[in-house]
Length: 204
Image (tube, rainbow, N blue to C red; front, side, top):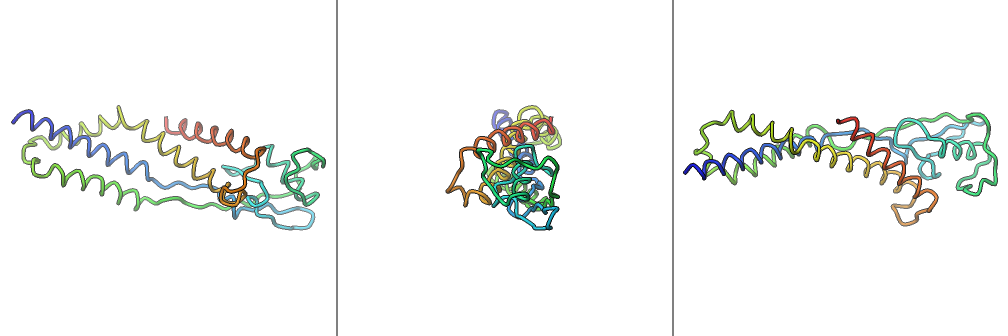
């Protein structure tokens, strides 16, 4: 009986910990929409969607690689000048108008967390009467999650967040991933790594 009680407690702790993890994994996050964000050229107020013109960012400003492409687009109306045939303007000749989108929601995170908890509860319910220290189970669940599951959950969340941002650009510029330019792919991969590491550092 004592062994059964211990196993039920362990499974209950695991279920609650996974429920907390599901809530954090599906938490909402805001990201810049590279398909709909625009640059506005200063000389003629012409607007360009950034993603379809191979300009992108994962935050609210363009890095030097994409800044040059934006300057050339406004100055010469060109894209993909990887051989630097055209000299970019010495001054910023555009304004950046970011547009953001939101992935998931707190209600979705809560719902999926409850689903995980409910499924686990249904499985262990016939034996739950053996648990006499429910508060202890809840406290231990929090401790177990903090020690063993918090970092893996945050790593998985950051990986999902970064992948969403990368795919947002790829869908805008590479025709849903069918056509990929090596020059862009190398830069996107490097930027994605930095984005992932920045996300991890924020949750340390």
